[in-house]
Length: 356
Image (cartoon, rainbow, N blue to C red; front, side, top):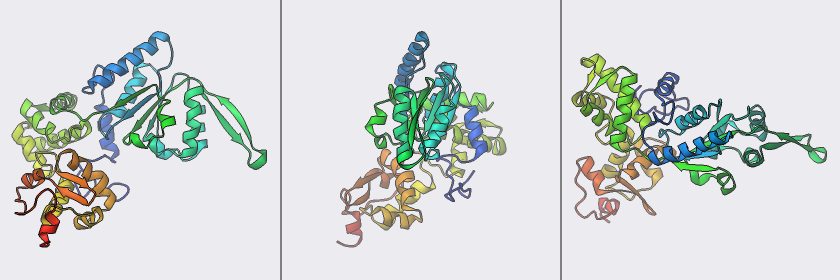
């Protein structure tokens, strides 16, 4: 996979972005842990979730509804499957964008088995009518099905078997309080530390039958943006390079050379990330500059820059959002090996550029 590949919506596929390739997704699924004991990282979440599930099994009851929030690739889908496995229950997987009408949700809920786990990804993108139906389903295990239209319409109550809803969201702030409050257990997934990612990489390398030394794993972990999904994807691309260009063993040198081919630098920035920084520094003197102007400068849509590149750059301390626009930090100049304008102090580089 490279930058020339495109997703279904026509946007460039990123090695450090979300996968849309079915084969890639199948490999990712094969690397998923199957139980809490195998799951690496998220220690607090694992401990709390283990208590919830063990208590439910001891009571012989279904587990409370679970809400998982956090950035993509941190393990929300994996944990939902683990919940089903730990409860020895089947799992049904769908997503918020797929449920646009209350009838869509009613059809799913009415077909659930007792104790089944319903995983609802991107739950914040569900339609409002379906969301309101979900309130009653979660609390009372029933839904009201409307038959007919206008004054003659009647509501027929439909009893549901007890089930566990696992909701996942990358934007917990968009969930309305009435929905959020109906979850018995909520957890926020944190980005991984490099040492945790090294453990993930060693485990995945074993499953993929790839030989990797500790320095090679550390090199990949340091470029994985704190995200296991990205770590696994980088590992597979480094594996390819090692098989073609070397003896198949992943060392620090091999990992560095492979990731240079895929344009992932030593901090995990890819071509889009560096393009945004280079435009901000070289064209606008470090900012401040408006988001739309910056997007035009890098030849991307405004939403792509704001939602794909910016979150990581801000988290890395390379870019700051201010009321006047986007501003590069001193770390950004240092990372690209550039010297800030002489009179640039804390974000007035654009004014300096034009002699203001």
